[in-house]
Image 1: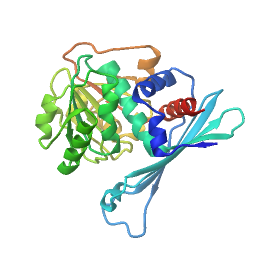
Image 2: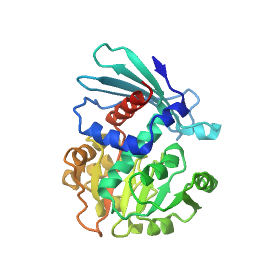
Image 3: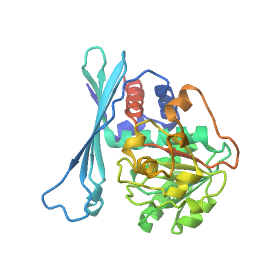
Length: 315
């Protein structure tokens, strides 16, 4: 069995190849059950403190490969100077069940999340999109500019975070990596300048206001993965043509589940899934003035596609 460190996992998943692998993965027959959510309370949990979450995400093909990701989400880790998400991925031989590859799940998750986001933007955003706003300066947010530059002609990146020093620090790191990036403190103004807005936060209350949006933008929401998490308000959902990564988004994310239940949007407003976009090779933007929106909760198909790519690179 091969074991990859975080750096080795990163090296095995270059974004251009990863975006293509996920695109192909959505075109392949694959079983991906709804992820298992287990909410964990602690004896000394303070009032209002978010529960810790244990996620299990399996997927498999009839032949070839299968895999499962184990994820621990601890939202209050930031106060301890630790990452909020820890995970491991195990790739197994579909015929024998033997475990063949173990990857760093955190690196895999961050990169496949950014890659799936960029894949959706490649199909939904204006092809001349050059200005990217990243809302959130965490691990996934740090990968978004690199993924998007592999899919669109992004020239300028702005970073916003509730903690401004985090945004400025990430922008500084991106500049050392050859990306024109700046930290910003006025979110409304930054939204007005952007061609693409990518939100990668653990927000429980909306931080993106639909009144700020302008025609022709693409909105990417990839932070909310439970029903009580939202990154965008109702006005965003009303104004946008909505696509989701999988049907799971309807029950897993507050950004979709709550507006559906409250009648803000209807099932008919959910135009399609990322799998449908890939399988039918669609680029469905109706006009340059349309606002498109992609809501991703993450799919085990993306994880498996990434792990197979990693296996091919190290085998």
